[in-house]
Amino acid sequence: MKISNLRCFMLLPMLALCVPLLNAHASDGVIHFRGSIVEAPCTFSQREQSVKLSCTQDGKPVVRTVAFNQLNNYKPDNNVPLTTQIHYLDPQRKLAVLEVTYR
Image 1 (cartoon, rainbow, N blue to C red):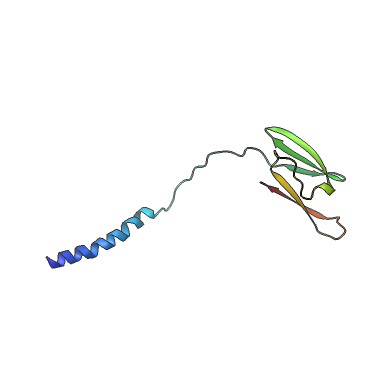
Image 2: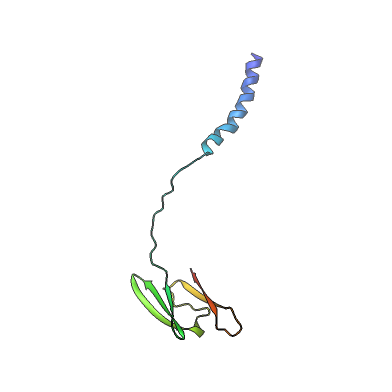
């Protein structure tokens, strides 16, 4: 009688620790996403002294021309979720990288 009670007391804590671990294991599965990309990103085209900025707003194309000297910290307006930053690669400011950040 004492041996069966002892086994019971030893088995009970083991079960209490092992049962949650069995439920927590996942070896594979599928995650489903809902939604879509609402608008495509803007495209930039270099011109002589400016950049042509083409974006889609509310399903309609919007084209802006921005001078090079206005591109640093440029924010088109509230409907276009982007900002630009220019990083010059040479002291003469002839070669630069345009960084575009979408919010």
